[in-house]
Image (cartoon, rainbow, N blue to C red; front, side, top):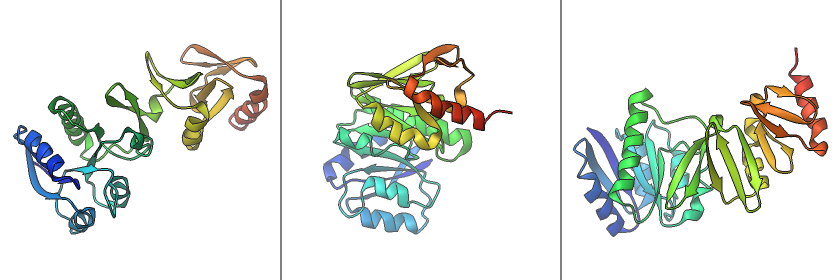
Length: 231
């Protein structure tokens, strides 16, 4: 049995989540909280909880703050009524991000993801990641899977292998977040992971057999990186 708690300042939202979870025979809701401080103290008492469902917009301690404060190997699934919080959840070690009203079908996807992670190594996914909103869903992108990011007017095209998704973000905002992971702007329209560059001929770089142009104003900084990493 997987033990879980639900944290939400709306009792009706708790009732909906409990109703959904009752349909999973391997899940047990051991407690619910409308007060995030009480929930935090409960978790500090080292109760064995496999996954926490918590609303983000909570008074006192927000769901995001709760994830950051957690010291046990407890997984988190964030819930919210506001899509704006997706950006704040960047790089949090959470299983999933659910936008209310939460359907049973969407919850099932989150549960499947949780069970997969649990069976894999019994710990949260520690790899840096972020969410991209597509329709009514938020798609998790692992930073290590990104091949390049291309600016397309108001959107950013994030390419991962043969797949891509579109984020309503500027390249500058994405560059600021990804810079700690050795991503760099090499053109006014492109950001790349420097570790994936396999070739550079002065005009473009090669990443997974894809040629990506290098802007003239970015060539010097790219040369510095390459010289610092040559034999």
